[in-house]
Length: 105
Image (tube, rainbow, N blue to C red; front, side):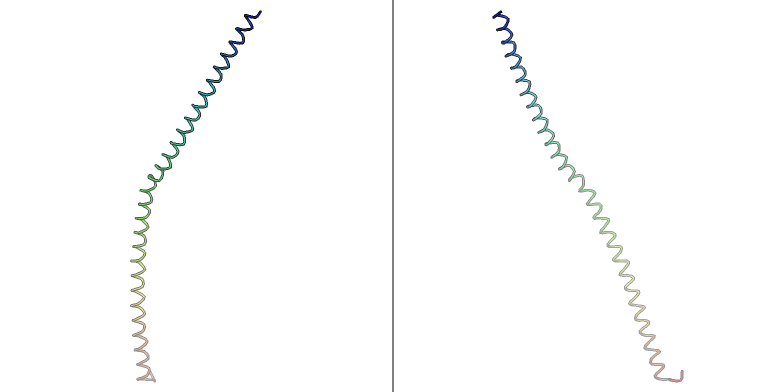
């Protein structure tokens, strides 16, 4: 009876060693997978910033173009308003002068 019991204990010890080795291997695999995932995430974040650069540059160029067009448009509008104001000022001065020279008119 001692021999089967001894073999059973040895088998249990070997089985426990196999289980412990498998547990350590699993932990190593999980740690390696986590490290790889963190590396991939870091590469993704770096790549995402690089992917945004052309879109930001394009948006900036369009914004600058829109600003230029608006500046030109409102500059033209301001010039027209100044001309209109100058013309009205001349007309008002002419009307005031005509009124002073010929109050009956």
